[in-house]
Image 1 (tube, protein in one colour):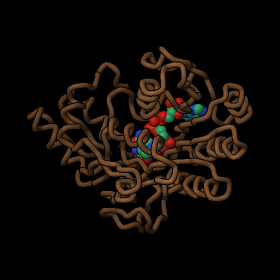
Image 2 (cartoon, protein in one colour):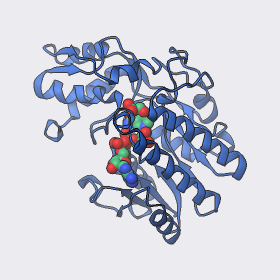
Image 3 (cartoon, protein in one colour):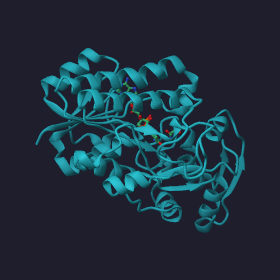
Image 4 (cartoon, protein in one colour):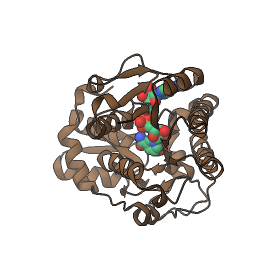
Length: 316
Ligand code: NAD
Ligand code: SER
């Protein structure tokens, strides 16, 4: 079995993706890498390497020496954090991608997964059922970096045959690992506060509708896309992917079905402007037609699972 590396493995997606890939490929075939000194307890069974994706020399040496053939590149600054440090966000989100694309171009890596985001869209994009191909004028540094990344992925595929695959993830909702500084983080935070305090003060307004997805669906989509025969992966920029869409008020109502006393208040901050520039819902027909994507989780099921499983002791 050839080796796989997940770079950014300690994050919200990386933790669960590494666990799932290890189940499929075997513990010793999937290396977890991150800039953090240590991996979370849950990943301690397998190999962990401290790796800064910006240290391209080290990344190159490690990947070549260990004959790693498949790379999941998740290290990035997310939308809210990126707005606070645009220069660094641009550097981190782009340089790492070039290092990996170049390694693939040289023939060291055979397959890359690099995630994009609904943040590639902007205020001029049609908001409802946003099509795969449409106006894209992102207004955040994060969105600009993801859009540029998509263009480069497609370029490396067309020019050099690099097998790179990508999904425009919506906001992801999970309980294994906390989210890392995005605009959709409220939809995770709300469950911790609901369970701990039965109340939540939301940083987005009541009627801000955004596309979201339960993590299990996102991980399954990622692996299905990576396992699809190359000829079925017709889009080499990034695939639209849809799970469910809701507003904070609708999410609160779902929580109240299980916790009738739950209350929500609203104090929109700088993240409101980011959210306002993103779609309400996504049309993912291409993913469905090309490689058979279908979501499993709707809002009610996701809310039930989250309330059952969030560990309020891990809340920061
Ligand atoms: P996260 O912030 O939870 O995790 C990112 C991980 O990258 C962290 O563990 C961090 O320590 C690591 N990292 C940061 N700088 C690094 C460096 N220099 N070298 C190596 N590792 C470094 O993010 P996430 O939510 O897991 O997102 C992963 C990817 O998916 C990102 O590209 C993000 O843009 C994309 N994405 C996420 C969502 C979401 O809702 N979570 C939605 C759309 C796209
Ligand atoms: N969840 C991500 C964010 O809010 C979307 O890419 O930044």
